[in-house]
Image 1: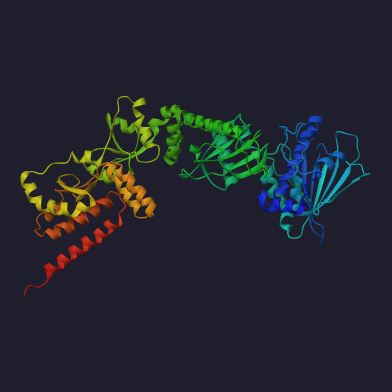
Image 2: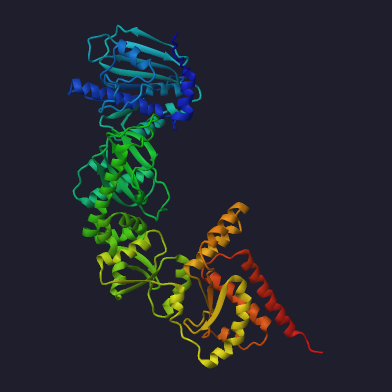
Length: 604
């Protein structure tokens, strides 16, 4: 024997109010949505139909307020009331095979039930424009029951919905709340939406979508769009760029943030579906590289989720995302070609986004590469400015190494490029594709040390004791000291570590906080790297303090000084200190203080 599912309407209402819909006032959206679909169907029968929606707030003395929603749409027959309004999941916006038709907003026959979130009773008075039938009243209650009756009164084709405020929901039945909700959800609707209260009446969607309006020139359009963006997001933007996609029937505008954006941040976009508001925190509408923008768009042919507050991730949405990215990219290309000053202002803030785009797109790489800025020892320079200096572009692809070498390279008169940030190594590696005369030179710390001046024989003899004591003190840390002369002379020592040594340091840092099992795994990785890599501490023989240190005879004092210089070199190289190295700093300073105290004790 087959049985039917039993539907608990109160449970459905709880699902709607507390889980499915994020805002209680979403019932206004459902009223507008049904009205728009009804007018769309009426226009198919009678193109001369005016097409108006009226929301009227009625204050009733000491009683609860009411809201009336009226439209001059296609209306319903009594049979349609039973089939559509009383059946959850049924919709008039589907064809005989159950497929959703393309001209309507509604997807599921569940929207009107959202009115139970604010009212214990829903009254619908409707008359069909398709059939010569009398008007019908449908009265539904929160307990899951409903009744219908035929009305004798002469009612014009269309639908009226009456809601009586449930106790505790009065805030949603004020003129201000209804106006705000009607504008929020229906600002782009193609039919006028009137909100009335007493003698007051206002059309909330008079302006429509500003990106579809006609303007005298591009500057006037940009100013209008920026005003719209500021009003929509309560934020000022740097620029406004119209975007569109044939896939999904999407059009709108991308607003460029006036401040640098985090690469991993998610930008909530304001999205309309067939000009009805869908959501203002819709993610993943634009490509990942467009993290600098917040968009307002309307989609005519994307599939909404059941809550109608986002889109299903499907092939159509993926295609729309790709086309919107191409539209935005083309606008940036056009800006770079025709409005260089405007593009430079954009790059000053969002160069990381353009680097991401250039890394993914060959055409954009060729178009934008000369504009791309890089951090250098001479300040921020574009690729074009770098290439004007000569045929050799020296760079490092590690931020800590750059900070380690920047001061030294600058004092040597070398321009060193910091390519240690995301996208930058691959962008520089491709530079010869567009500038074949450029030679790229990746700089390692040991390469730079080879250009330092050697000590003469007398200097080698003077530094022998210091280097011998330092060798013994730094052996546990796999660091070898050397003495050279280099600029700037105020830098006492330079810590240098190759890629293998840096990798080994990172493993050792991880081992200090890892559990025993993971420590064993890290040991295995380190063993597989081959011979242990050593680092180097280059003592600057041009530095007055180092030269004075070389005259000290106490081996213990030299060892303590070498330990302090080693830790100082690590810190200047922006290297994290291990627990042993932190202890080395404390021990070295304490040892030097003890030696100083011993020297100051009075002789007997």
